[in-house]
Image (cartoon, rainbow, N blue to C red; front, side):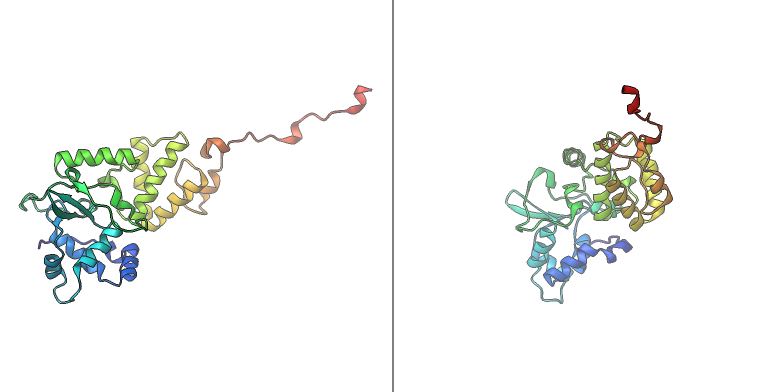
Length: 261
């Protein structure tokens, strides 16, 4: 087991709490324990009995159920290499600063192995799990992950994002897609400026602003009911397909029927 960092927002992770209630398992404690069990790349051997002894030694819980629940909701990934099973934490590199003295991972890279899909008919509610297949500190894995993200339209620079929650990542990716759809693709300078503004808002307000601006079809980010949002209903800030020329009917000439007689 290794020393890891847990950010304050971990304890208010709503989706993780809902999954814990749904499965009636101590998933929050187990998930934080997996961070300590994983190596510097966020990888671990898929050995439920050993992990259970390390993480929940006194609970008497079948750790296979714990791993399956976390895997089903995409909090962790599962892959097979040379007949052996391994796991990895997709968001590991966004939350951890690894000590340089920690030895390199000895486990295979998920990008070079066969991914195992969760055996669930329900869709995952953890959107961030599809962003990368590995923490990617090794060159090949990182490049493979970037290519996969680009194909899925979810490429982001995690080190530039002010928040890393699944909800924020989802709406930020949706915002970038929205800008493409209205033919106003984000430039690096604009993206940097908007991320800085979102950081000042705080996560909850930032998510609300992104959601509100996408629904309004705007090219700028505005908070709900803000003065700027109301002023943004000009022709330049609306979706191109919604632009209509406004005509003042009072300026149109009036037809005089008596002139035709």
